[in-house]
Amino acid sequence: MSKNHLSVFLFVFFVALVFSCKKETSSSNEAANEISSQSANKVKPPTATKSIYATGLNDPRGLKFGPDGYLYVAEAGVGGTISSATFNCQQAPPPFGPYFGSATGGRVSKIVSGVRTTVTTQLPTAVNSIQDVFGAADVGFLDNVLYVLETGGGCSRGLPANPSGIYRVNSNGTTSLVADLSAWQHAHPVANPNPEDFEPDGSWYSMVVVDTFFYALEANHGELVKVTRQGEVSRVVDFSATEGHIVPTAMDYRGNFYVANLGTFPIMGNSKILKVNPSGNIHEIADGLSAVLGLVVAKNSWMYVLEMTVGAPFPTPGTGTIVAVSPSGDRSVLISGINFPTGMTMGPDGNLYVSTWGFGMPPGGGQVTKVTLQ
Image (cartoon, rainbow, N blue to C red; front, top):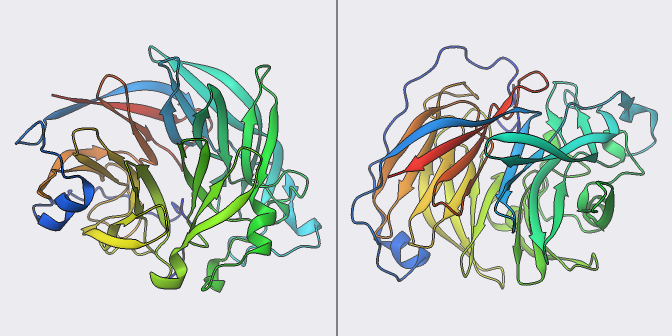
């Protein structure tokens, strides 16, 4: 297994033994100044309890509350049967390629009081040769309309007519392509792509809506892009040019963008948080984190960091952790023992909602975990 293997959802040959989580106790006054100049509403970190909020999901990833107050979850799906090897286009290198895709099966679910209903299944989904599933990655709303960041499409996934990109979900459950991010990445390569695990159609992971623009974060090439509602794409920052192959995954916005990274395998506990201003200038504000896949910067200036695995070299069930970072930069473990978390959001109730069992499970095995802050 190459140290630089970057497959975001690697779970094959994971360590079965659950390692104990390690507590983060470092502090950084710089982080406080970078995140916000506001005073914290709480001096001490909140306490938290976790409970299962929803079940029956297919590889849940990014999630957000909609304008109706309900939770919407992007689900990568289960892959398909169309081999990318049948198409004359650039493929993901072995052992990841070929992919097996389906034009439908990527899903968005709506959760009402813990009950899941389907919003759409009309999104691409693909599975690679080591059983990593790519599909709907995140959701966002603009003018009360649901949009999906899709990463399971493109020719390298066996779906040349169904690219990775941003899709609008119509009122009848059909979807319409807004921005073809597969084509854009082919035409606008980053400075330092990593050839050992290069994904020709990208590994888009997080999306936020700011004003009337979509901002999408891509992990494999390593970039943040801005997309208009007409589908025009421009690069905000190329992380590969200055940071190398860090695998940026999680993002939140509060005046500036805050971006965290997964890092490469084996997991070394060297993930970090970067502040990115709207002009694309990068400044590191925290380090020493572990395989980050979720990030929330709350209104009271507390920051919550979702670590997929702590204390093990590869993804391991029961080792996910949420770290609370105060406005003064003090860190503490908010809650641990989370199973394969892949995304996190804060609800209008002030609690955290986490996609769990987000990979490596049979269809319907994914969940949403509610983390109640007290």
